[in-house]
Image (cartoon, rainbow, N blue to C red; front, side, top):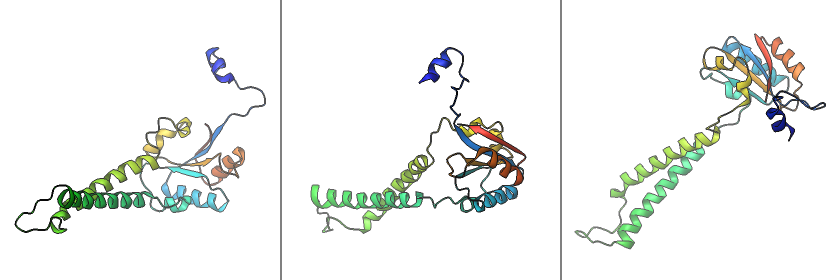
Length: 195
């Protein structure tokens, strides 16, 4: 409530007495993927559960090390593909056997054989839509702002740095303790990041 007024007065950084700034967490900077994986395993063994890793390329086994659950994207895709298959069958049956009955050379009003290409194509089409839009939803895209960008070396995550963030939402989070912990794991630069 007071923040908009203070920003208009040019006092945007002012904090009322007794209020603590909100934090995203503590981010540690590691040189190699091996050091990052070692730090993740050590942090999990120490009881930290709310963590995120930022790397310039995928690292095999990092999801399991972080304790991330299996992605539901495969289920989303198969459900969308089955919906596409069902719609294709129903559409062809309804148009051929119900709405526009045409008997041509004694052929049945609806047959599976000539319907296979349409069933396949609609399954693939809706499965692809499910994959793309499911990925956008699960990754919360587009995300125009994330607290991680307040980290002074955030750009290194897309270049050559391996970063581990222990989030403030973790039940065991104590900023100074987490900073010491990440430094003991080999972090080259450890920083408390504002939300």
